Image 1 (cartoon, rainbow, N blue to C red):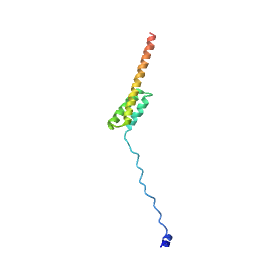
Image 2: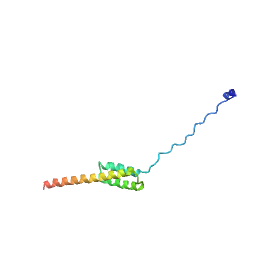
Image 3: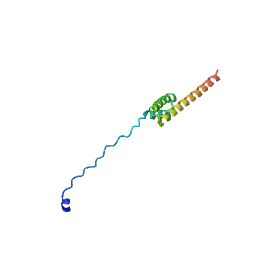
Length: 104
């Protein structure tokens, strides 16, 4: 019986079925990520504009997902960017006022 099985041609093996790969999960926090990025950038440049936009996006993302750490970090960094912008503007306006008062 073994001799008969060895003499018969073997059927080709079919490849194993592999299901398609699932796409990466979408966490839906694009606004929180944008708020975080804008908050970081607002610390270094364009503090007023980017700080306000980052703050708005962070608040909207926080309303959507209350336990979102990225949104919280974006809000905090945007506020720090706005406060830093205000401090710089106060410093420069005071220095400018002092400079003009010396010439008067």
